Image (cartoon, rainbow, N blue to C red; front, side, top):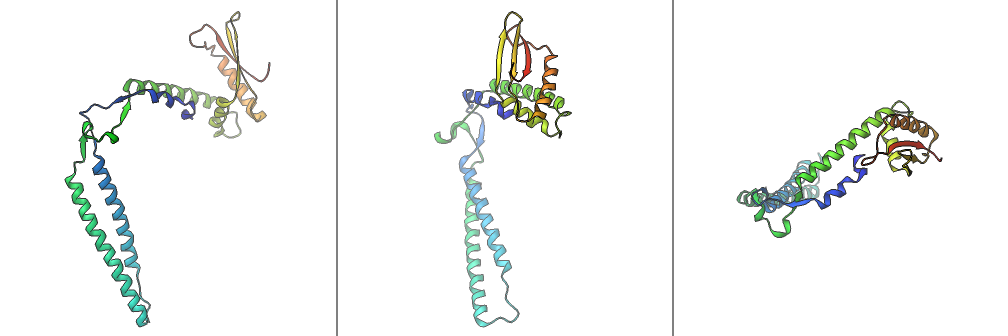
Length: 216
């Protein structure tokens, strides 16, 4: 559920060039390796076809000729692939597997996430996941099936809510709209009771969060 928080969008603005001294896989080596794998797969399929060729016990002359022709055609294709694979393997052997970033063609260069920003986003994701897990553990006793807890939380996170600050009482009321099923409303109501007991302050303010369900 963490991707639903869309935190990854923050990462788009946090990239940095990769140091020139770092080595990466050579795109040319990768391309050759991919072609070798593809042609090796083709060869295996042709070899399987070659091995599956059979003649009936009482074969006619025409059947024998057709059998020999298919055998010969497959043998030629396999030999052609063997030569192509051998040539590609030699090219791959002569091509450096890893090269420095500054040796990459301009079109193949890339950036990486800023280290500090990535750590920051990972920390937020971990906090969000732990909070979600804690709420799921509170909900598991109430839905008809234990597996419904996280899907119910997803519903809560996606439903609309009204925010009503009250500076006099130092509260910020978060009023969730009703969910699709009455049974879900009952489970959510119990969850909100648990959350209200924590007396959590809205960050950066002295307003205590008060969670409620339904219209006032």
